Image (cartoon, rainbow, N blue to C red; front, top):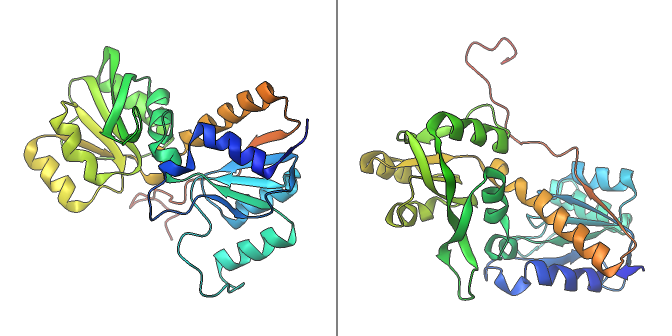
Length: 274
């Protein structure tokens, strides 16, 4: 059966209730028509021109991103800016654009759960619980059996798809309990230590947090914003596939194949640096 945007939003509400979003956030349908029919959806982390072009090329009429294209109130829409060009092109192609940002961060089985599942953690609980049971920011869980430092690092590089990782402190010889927060979670590092984590993984770790961890002898890992959040999109993709099959929705679901990490790692002796 065909579905409309408002039905898709109702489905997303079941996966990651929009009411869980932080009050400073902007989620839900940001561009489009609630009554429009949906035939194909492309999922990606960021609302970039590249992602929009991929959606158009694939014949998608709807984009679901984690980060919202409209975050702060717009006083102007300048079409020679990336955001303005995105909005102009989306409207020209009648593209519906939906954001699932901090509602997906805070939901049960959300961004941090996706990262934890990819790493193989079990017995997950929120690192900073929300007002609703099992919701909240970050997750803490266990490896059963515990991982050696070497096995843990192999797993970490594989999941984050990174060539280099910044770490403050030492990776424990054995990792049993791990805390994490997909995306920017520097402020949760102290909670992770208080809750008995052997180490903490997040992104955009602040300098003062790194110094604090160093002096406490606590291992904190910066896995980058993209690296720690990217697993959530395939996680959401699978959930939407299950929902589509359950409700017999007639639509195609695509996971972006063009989206890449925004940073490239260079070494000082790299001949391609300049």
